[in-house]
Length: 295
Image 1 (cartoon, rainbow, N blue to C red):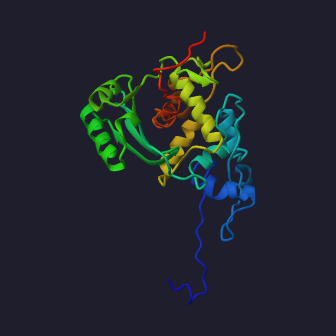
Image 2: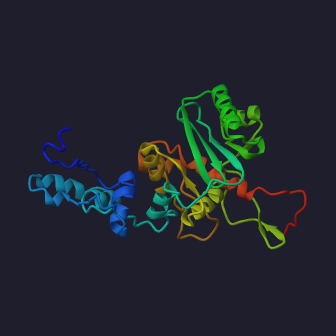
Image 3: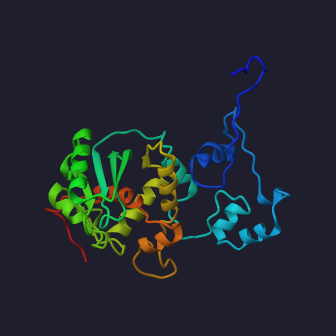
């Protein structure tokens, strides 16, 4: 409006705190890598640059936990001092920017079913290792979950043998009625092939096995997700940052920190990661009719 009359250039100013959302992907990371689009600018500003802030506010920032202090006081977008972290920040950003991947191969559906109807049920549709659709329904009953799963199954042409649902709690009913595969978090890890033999891997349970292996796929840029919902990207990224090894200083089986601890760290129920990590179950699925067992 009246741009030509007043010789104006359209501009937009946005402000934010460091976070793994679209601003990281579209502005911070390209600026860091020297690939920021020529019509964009990224200006870093710290709280200490503001002469009007009261010193007590700065002191309150310094009393925050380590990660929050680095983000909000020092303006560090990539700080994470935890050696147990399984997915680095660049890998998370690339997971949601999968321009290097193609939707090909078989299609799968993973379903993380709400527990006692208190959180949400999350569906993810995969074409190969690329998640092409994510959908959630809140406080859903058994009938609603099964009905929606059937709709998605028909829409994307997915065979029942390529659908898996969390079988804990209410999810057991979904598996029974849908007749799909069931995922039991605390069950024994699945055996893996080494040469001509199948061996028991060094994981404490199936969820740890699939989580750790799925993290490897993400870090290797072999798994991704198409998502244009910034809220979903941000909440999922927060959960991916908290997928960490537990007891890394101890010998023994590998495991990940429990869901309750993640809930304490992010301040909400982690509803996204399980429907991502379950995708790896299909990579472990074998024909068990003939195999060699070794102790």
